[in-house]
Structures are given as C-alpha cells and as structure tokens.
Length: 474
Image (tube, rainbow, N blue to C red; front, side, top):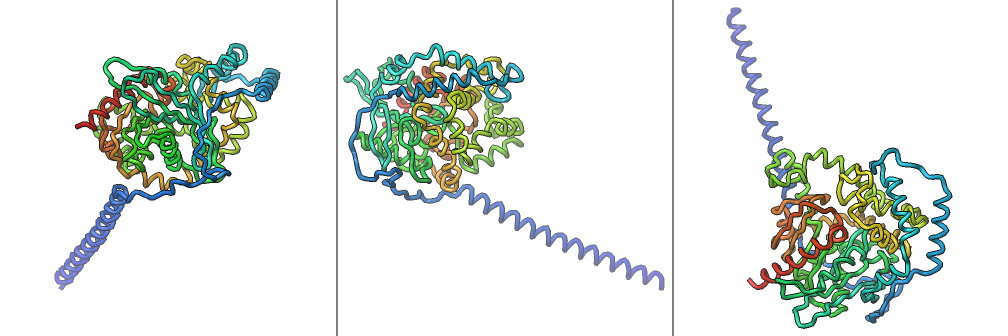
C-alpha cells in the first residue's frame, strides 16, 4: 500500500514537472516572439526609407518679404564706434584681476597664458586698416533671399580660356568666411594635371557674420539648404558643386538630398552618417570592432573613451542647443570672452591632445587668422544669432532624422582628417551617399581642416571634382 502511495506521488511530481516545463516553454516562446517582433519593428523603423518631405522653397524669414532680386556690392568696414568700444573693453580687462589657470594645460578650458598671447597680439600687432584691405581683397555682395540679406564673396578665376566650375563653400561654427580665405587663391588658380578651375561662392550663413539672421524661430539647417540653393539660382547657377564642413556639412548634405538634380557633387571634410542605424552600429561595433577597418579602429573605439571625450568636450553643444541667447549676451559683452570661447573650440577640436600642450595647440594657427575670425563675429554682433542655429536643429531633430536616412544619388567625396570628431566607415557612408566616389584619409588635421590646412584641403577639392567629372562621363 505504501509503495502504491509513493508511486502515485512520483507520478504527480512528474506531471507537475512536465507542466512547469511546458509553462516555461510557453512563456519562453511568447517572450522570443515578442522580442523578435520588437527587434524586427526596430530594424524596420531604423532602415525604412521615407518619402522625401516637401518644403516651401520661398518661406520668408525676415521682416521685409517683398520680392527683391537686386545684387548689391558690399564692403567690410570696422566702424570707429565699434573699435572705441573694444578699446574700452580691453582697458577694463587689463585693469581687472585675472584668474590664472591651475596648470600649463587647457584641461579646464582656454588657458590664461594662451589667451594672454592672443590678447597681446590682438592689442599690439593687429593692424585694422591692413586687415580691412585683406578682408576686402575679394568681391563682396549682398542680396535678399527669402526676406534675409545674405552676404557672400564671389571670386572668379582670372584665367578665362579654361573650364570654370561653380563651387559653393559652406563654413560652420565657430568659423566663418575666414575659414576659406587662404584656399581661395589656390582654388581659383589653374594647376597642372587639371583642365578646370573654380568660380567660388562663399556665403556667410544666415545669422552668421555679415548675413542677416531670421526674425522668427524655425530656420534650421535644411531651411538654410533651401536658402543656399536659392542664392545659387539667383547668381545664375542651376547646377553647381558644394563643399561643407562642420555645420556646412549638414547644410550641404541637405542640399544634396533635396536638390540632387542641381548639386552635381558634394565634398565634405566631416564625413559622417548621422542616421540612428549608424549610431547603433557604432555601439554594436564596440563588441565586434572587426566591423571597422583595422587601421581606423582607434578613431571609433574604445567606446567608453569616446563617450567620455564627447561628455567633456560637448558641453558647449548642450548650452547652445538650449540657451543660446543667454550665452550670446555674455559673449557679445566681452571681446576677450568671445575670443576665449571661440578659440577654445577651434584649438580643442583641431587635436584632442592640444589641451595637454602648454600652448594649447596655438602652433597650428597664426594668431592674426584667429583674431580675424573673432572680429567677424564681434564687429557684426552676430554671435547670438549664430548660436541659435543649434537650438533650431535640436528643436527640429525629428525632421533631421528623416532626412538622414534618405540616400542622395549625388556623387560624394569624403576628406577625413585624422582628428575628426566622428568616424563613419566607408560602407556606412554609402548608406547615405551610395555614390561615394572616393575617400581621402589624412594622417593629420582636425575638425576645421580648411582653416588649419588650406593646401591639403584645396588639393583634395581638385582631386574630388576631377573624379566627379569622370564619374559623370562613365
């Protein structure tokens, strides 16, 4: 009898075990299905290509929306009232107590000794009449596009018996049109091995330097792409080539996406795919670095080091994307504060190791060039309107994400500096730029390459356009 009871108990236990196991299998199967469906939906969301959005190509961003196609000559002027105000600010700075940097590095921001070097050169060596002649050596113009007075330089080659290529050069922040000054003569002069030369259009972006800023919110990078396209049409160029770096890359990419029949080729010194799937690949690649060419692994990983770097260096990005007017007021009140803020970004993003150098990386640049760039923002009072672009990009990120995953058929060339902020492998770039004609990988240079190394930059422009023309004639 006892044996029978034990047998029954064992059978009950076996049934319970089988039941528990079956229940486990059921829930596990349901979980796998849910995860699989979720993963599939996530993949579809990341990879599906939406239709190209339609935008109003004539939105007015200024106070005067009357159609005016006049093109007016313009000269850069440093008004005496502005110079006198700057002198008073300099005197106040000299009298005020100064806080010395803790060490001979720039790990806390612009080093006081580095700023002192720039300040000394600005005060005693910077010759304003001479710099005005320098700025005005090229022809400057203004024209009203979508309600905004847009400033641009228009430089044509002196040689006429050669093919002329229209090229739009787009600067970023905190650079300006000054970024391209040393490249202009290199690009407008014929060189051996090439049967063409460039006609250059170099605009100040809306709200930057000598271009009027918008009077209402919403003017983000893809709207500026429309403004730049309309500027080129105003100048008689239905088809043209584009270069962009930093914010100019964002704008140039949008031009290539929105106007692929007009942009004949796109050259970038900031070759990055900003789609979310590219971001996820970067994270996954930290587990399988073989997804990236071995020679470039150190430009993307270790992931923890890169994230730490971005957290340290991108505080300005968060500030400008949230409170641009607050920081703008502070910067416009002090020429030295503006100089420190702008040049901290330029020196730090030229090479991450510059912050550990005693000179902060100042050796990469001529101080006169750095002051020229600051003077464009200071003399025009445009730092606040320039910073607002970051706020607009952040506020319109959903549309930025949509445009980021729409491929552009425009032939594209990537020039990769060694110390660029991000690195997208070639095959990731081709998701956005399927006609990636070529890539130049430099073993030097940083984020503001045209400003830092105009010779290497100009050589690569010629190389890229030559390959675009060959690609077109295939």
